[in-house]
Every structure is written in C-alpha cells, then in structure tokens.
Length: 358
Image (tube, rainbow, N blue to C red; front, side, top):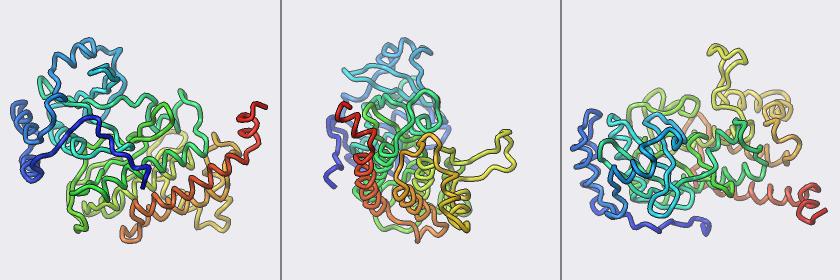
C-alpha cells in the first residue's frame, strides 16, 4: 500500500534477533539496573540514541511536575526537547524490565508512519524510553474528554484507517511478526493533523509468520480482550483484531469499552461488544444502533457508513478467532469506508459553503 511509509530518519537495527530473543526470555521482574543495561546491549542500536540520565534530567528540569504529560501502568511520561525535536520521555519502574525491553526491541526494529517512533533510551538510574512527541493527545481523550473539539465522522474513519495500517504492518510485513496485545483507544495517539499512531508496545509478543497460537499469561485491558485469550491465554494476531473491533465501536459510539451505570457501580456494567451485538440482533437493528451512535456527531454522518463500520467491528469481535478478518482485510474495508465518508463530506452543504467561502 503506497500510504505505508517507513520512517527511517534514525538508523536503528537489530543485528542478532536470535540472541536478543534469548536475552528477553531470561529477564525477570527482579532484574537489577546492571542486568537491564547488559540486556539492552543485546539489542544493538545506533549509539546516537542512547541518552545519559543527565541529558534527560536537564531536558525535563529534574523531571519537574510541569513537564509531566501522562501516567501509565508502567510509569510517568514527561515532555522535553532533545536532539532538536520535541520528545516524550517515559520513565519506567525498574520492575517493568520486560515491558521496557519489549518496547525497545520492537521499536528499534519496526518503522512505519502509523507507529510511534522511538528516538532513544537510557538505562541509568531508572529505565527510560524517548519517543517522538505526538502533540494532540490520544483517541480516548478525543472521544470522551472535554479539552478537544468533537471528531467529525470523516476524522474518525481516517483515525481507524491509520491505526489499522500500523497494526497491519506489524502483523504482515515484519519478520518475525508482532502481536501488540494492548490495542485500545488510549494507545492510539493523535497528531496535529488528526492522524493516528499506534503506541505502547510494552506487552508485545513476537511469533513466526503463520505460526500457531501461543499460550501466555493474560495481561491487557478489560473490555478489549477476546474470549480465547481470557479463558486459555491463547494469543495470535486475532487478539489484536478483536481489540481493534472494540476501538471501532468506540469511534461509532464515543463510549468506553466497558459502559458502567450512571451511578458508577460495577454491577450492571456492559461491554460495547455486548451492547452492539444486542442492537444488531434486535427486531429493528437500525433503531438499536441509533441509540448507540455518539451524540457528538449530531446528524453529520452517512448512515450507510455507520452500518458498514458496525458490521466490520462485529466481524472483528467474532467469538471464534478463525472467523475474524485479518488486519489486511480490515484495511481494505476501511479504505472503501474512507472513500465513502470523504465523498459524503463533499456533499455536506455546510462543508461546501465553508470551502467556497460562503
């Protein structure tokens, strides 16, 4: 696909994939700082991207709270300017050694326009990963936060397509292929042009092309994990496909993956997958779906496109992983959907008037 552009501005190589895989398997959560530095050395990268602790300390004014832009499961994220560009520094806890090495391994190997780019890392004093700064928050914030303008339907489709292309790349075009394992709206970053990049590769698993499902400990986010993974720990590329289907439902509805009652209690909570399946199997599916469409869209969306994305999300979240499409098929479907949505936008009188200065 011509739109799949590999980002190669920083030369980062894995010279010995087999050796680094063995090193990854030896990591334990109790690894010392010296152990981590030694293991990171097994993943060969250009020395220009290995930062000192002092460089990161200075760039964040001592990791000052004014530089803090986020907090994740494995540590805090700080804004800084390094090597002439804006950066996001993830400061990780020492017990997150496996996640640190997983991200380092993937992002020094894989480069794509729709995957967040790694600038560098540091293993002094703590564990640090330095990424390009994606300045416009994440998809979850855009859908449910109060600090952003509502996303138009065309923007939602474009974000879905961008994210799907990033996932398709790690599923189909790398050797070995990678399984992200934590696809969710909070891990899809949005840039100033409302284009999307997949982020947070700390739970990534690698597998051989065409390989059978692996078994692993269950980690991830409630509402995004497919049944075979929750029940048996079975992991394949279809785990990411399922989670992506949930993201599509989020784009349609603006709701969280788990919808809780208005009183905030856990009892009565329902997943988006359940709510959409209930609507699709109702006597009048269109009426059921109408109640789930994000009110922020108003009437500014093509009904046919909403239905098409709903059916695509439904296919992605099939209980049987064999029935789910590949991310390649998802990309093709979303390309068609994107063309439909752009054409609909051009027929929207308000947009036409705005573009013509009326």
